[in-house]
Length: 123
Length: 435
Image 1: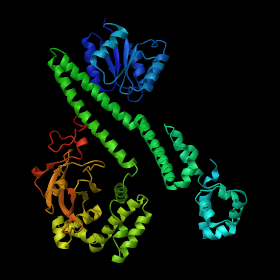
Image 2 (image 1 turned 90 degrees about the vertical axis):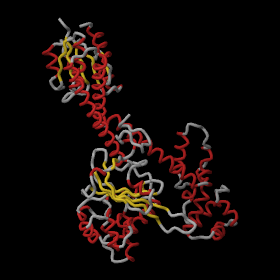
Image 3 (image 1 turned 30 degrees about the vertical axis):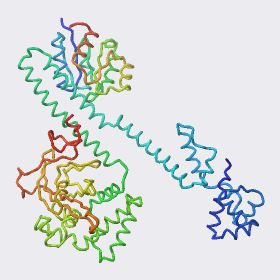
Image 4 (image 1 turned 60 degrees about the vertical axis):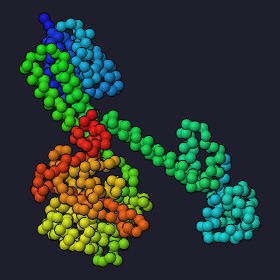
């Protein structure tokens, strides 16, 4: 059974591009675009990993990450955080909350695929 | 160095305040006038009986002479010396410096204050760049768009035998994101332009005058209803006195020239009359003939009448023969750069190549808005047989009334740096919107 990746990102064309790349490599990709309901979606979908945007409508990625890490079932879920703000402060905050990997936009498709493979292995 | 180093200067200052002659004070203090002269120029240190005698003659306490108001100045110089990376300021001779070169000392202290103020502005701007929510959101938006474009282009370029349905979908996404990127970049540039317009303090007298006029929408009711030529100077003086923007002698001098011209024009051609003439014949050439005004004067007068009276908002840009913009009343939607050179294609600059010949032309700005322009370059002042005439060009700008054929509209921009027109023969430098 293919490994599942939940992509929490509000930019539809980024979702489509990343979704296409990961799907072609055999991963099963779901997406979600709203920060407010992202944690519930993670609990419901129980993906193998999460790709999480930092700036989301209604609730930021850092808050979502903090809530995930407070949940014993999701404490060790691999989370790759994507952000347009590659600033040191955000990176430090994300690391403090237990992010697994961090990537700044704009990124290359190959890099995303490489990070996903490093975190959960081949599809 | 003792604080008493400047005592002589204080003695001289106090004596002058009392209106005493040097000889009188010398006599009262029981010393010779030449000795007092040396003391007053800080060339002789004094104390004891002589100091007491001088203080009594000047009717002040001794401490008023030994400790002066220069402390603030000395503090500023100390600070300036302390932040200097090189250890080359002779701090032990600071009081002597203040005494001998008070003007230079004030200048150093003023420069220090200016540097401090600029440091604070830079820190505030840095802070804004990092934390401004509008900028942060705009940058996030642009980077997200760039990410979507980069990922989509990679897929299109690197996926062999991509199915047609996917290819079409990605091409459509690419088109969407490209449009979004242009919009985002333009709004970011506009944001910076607006910030500069509203935040930056005046750097030149011309800029101070522009802000003074812009805040009053280029209309000064106090100069519109003067009784006669004798009322011009007092009215101009009163306006200059109250104008907080014109806070340097240079800005006030420029303001005086401009406001005097304004008042004289208003006396000769009242606002209601020119407004009525314009509503009847919206043509500066016809108005100049009717009123016997020069073209440059009639165009300036028109730009000084409120839009409500004219029935339309007119803008005016004036430049000198070097192309420097001297007057900017910007009509809505016609962007004029605040710094640097404007678009070389503007009819304003073409007017300089055919002095005294007026031109009526249609122009189109990058977003596709059309404006009617009237331009002429005229000699400024009176040229002599041995001095060449100095030309200035003026361009009156109004909305497109349909008087000129739309196909005649010349494409213009604001300034090359933010102009999105590719392949323009007049381009001086690359555009950040085309790079």
